[in-house]
Length: 480
Image 1 (cartoon, rainbow, N blue to C red):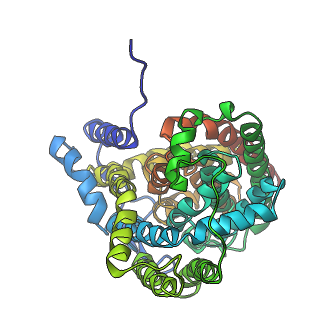
Image 2 (image 1 turned 180 degrees about the vertical axis):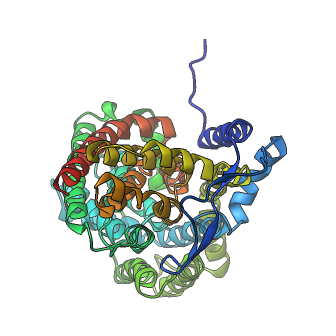
């Protein structure tokens, strides 16, 4: 008798699209009036203007077309800056760039040098990298950009004696907890504060506390798991895939005794260019308002630069045909990741087309009315958790919910900054495991970790973080 096999990410997402489509036949259609909010720079719902509208229930054809619309429609709520196709192309170009660099042997040589330097202290990579990713999360909501790092970092952890899930956790939890504890994140904290009509610095102390304590908890959790896996590899959640993952990520089946390539001068230069590429990407996003198009162009250009530099060493050089074939092979490896990004957005497509998004928001508005300070802020946290499943985009959720929910804090005797903190904490928490968040499903696909195994790993931490956030929010409400 065959064992039950958990569905793939594609099946899970299609099922969610179908469920939401069914809800459009059950939940009344409704809309808020919208007007231009100069502070937000976009149209936002107006409190007190909700009304029922003509329903638009979604059928089988709509379910089938939703992933397609999710891929190319830039008008989706919260995604005005980029259609999913932009992110998908970015992923494909990253795949090509990484494969070209890998082909030169520079990454393997660099990993060997790093492991020699950290001999016996490899565990220190976890706090160092998680803190670095958390800075990206708290400062600008690092999300799609993390997809560029999985193929680089996972092989490092596998060579160090850990598993692929450890590498995935370092990236996803580092950046995710950073976003959960956003301090001056322009795409979450600033947008939400503008929607709430307060300066973004209001409430920043509590957000720093959430960031520091949440990150400490996350680092402890990942380090404990990593130590356990290294001591007893059979306790890895992906133990049955250990050999397969080693062969896949290290592009070798020779086992522990394999000899890594030498770190020559050209390979060192390629590694410098490799690191410079990511530094320029982060600078471009933060300082130059870059997005997926510019970042894709950067990785394409740097792949060509690496190809040219590699010609100066007999061990690394490749001809034009080999370069093109290698780039295409790398893009092909991440094709599934690119496709899953569009499918993940299909849920939002169905909700908006079925006109139930505002109805859900209106129900939440009524739920928190008349509650005490303690109950109000915790109810707000749980409502934002629900909304985050439906609208994973941080800026999209802020634009949708803050103009409605923030003014209600005045009647509950709670500072509006606490509503902002509850929103961003809930959104960041859910996006550590949200199947409708393309970054989660994309990262897991790159790391070859199935969604059910990720849930087994991350849910205890999510519960711990939720309890921590509720305690801190409650203290904040009582001190208001």
